[in-house]
Image (tube, rainbow, N blue to C red; front, side, top):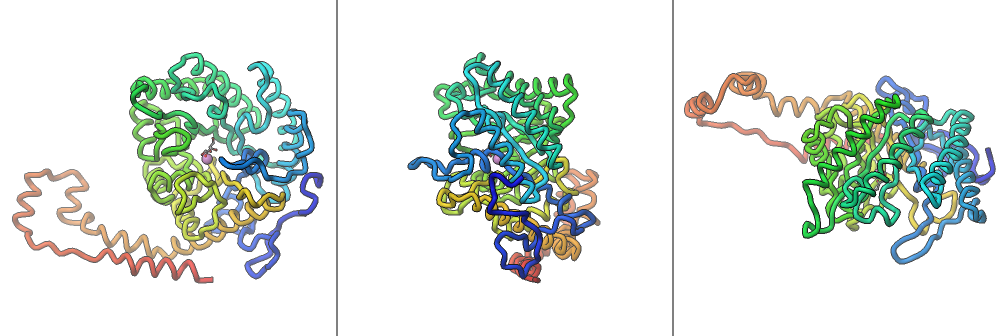
Length: 439
Ligand code: XUL
Ligand code: CO
């Protein structure tokens, strides 16, 4: 496999002193960290849409990306070349998983039948490539947002024919995901939201979204698809108000509609910051609710208010993310999917390698730091001490449900001198820096 990216051989671990830009300085797949190999802890995945389909288009300019399959003109020839290029790329990058939308791997046909036929043909090719390389499918998903028919939503469209059409497409992608041994299936509510309440039946749209997801659960049971269902929150873009706004909104939605047993959450770093949260906040909230399923690994830009989907390079963020993931006992069957694209100006094929190396090393480095931080228990012990008043006396009674307002009022009357302790934020930030820059 040396047809599409001949300028690169295999990217391997060379250690932190290496100056080879096509080597890993931290990602050492077989190194054991926290009882598992880095490969098992990190479960890296390539996003088919950005890496194979991203053309470098933006609101003001056309595609810039130079790709070795760029001379092809027939949609199915392009799809086949992209599939081969994808597996050559992942093999050279040592990326063990990939994720796709249906339309990423095969072109839409004139009719639904033709679309399905195209999908079957490319899925068969992908299945062979998976077998030949050992690369696995982390998740599949359906693109229910690009085509004009989804302008008002898919499962939340006011038009029932669109709801039915979306169901047909999800049904097919789920079948292909099962056929390829996919470990998860993602729902990102691309256009499931609204622009204005002046034309929106909010209650019906939310009820319909839940109906759609229940149908997906039923169909998975029917065909024996046992992958984990995931919802990916995002607060805005493309619609002004997305229904899956953030982890808190998704938890409320899942519980309201009795879906929490069937779904976990796929948390994307850039979506977290767009919602006004840190990535760690979203991971923590999902984790403590037993709903942390998988991660779309990327980062936004503090100065821009949209989803820039950059490769993650901020080691503070990757460290605190890996801290949550380690406390979660890992992500499996989820993983770290690089929902990230190279900048429009990074138009050469080799930039795809630099982008993924940057992201993989940032997470591997973050894993090493997070593991040391956890083993030291410095933060855990501080937090335990900070809440120690709930382990004895009146605090213990509160936690055990043994007192109510009457007893607490009596207690307060008898203990009017309250002694507070410092939160020590600056000290804790210094401790974190000690781990960040230990090597
Ligand atoms: C869009 C986004 C999607 C989902 C899959 O912001 O993140 O690519 O990850 O549909
Ligand atoms: Co995403």
